[in-house]
Length: 128
Length: 89
Image (cartoon, rainbow over all chains, first blue to last red; front, side):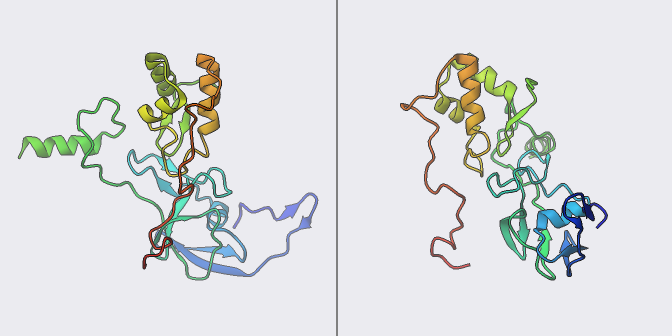
């Protein structure tokens, strides 16, 4: 909770609100009532919410107003939910987005951004 | 702010360098550039990068965004789940 603004230069001291607990990737976190999932995680220093499905590069929220879909996570088994628009509810289970297999990607594709998967695929092809 | 590694389309992970290279190699219209590189075809539907792509083309190829082959928005404008369209969970 230490990353929150406790004393605002204009608004003064922020009154402590009701806290909730939720889980992110199986780890418990606390949130204030009215926090979005993205805000609650940012308050704990968690900036990565998913990885790019194909390349595996890390992603966090970007626009924070629901336009860019960069912050989509799985909440209570519902995939593709935007963390920046969803308010935290008690005992919510949030999971980050993971890298997906790309079995149809040509292993010799020139601009292939991933290494490991295509290497594995090539190995598999060689070994039959 | 002209590094070729600078990401323009976040959804499909397309950098400025690749866009400029493709635009120069093929003399692309905005729509052709989108189809060649997939920039603007990701989950957000080009909301983050459409204006950047158009501005980049305008600057690099002095191609003003016209009305003949625009970077259009096709329905559904936002990602919609099948359950939302009337299926069951």
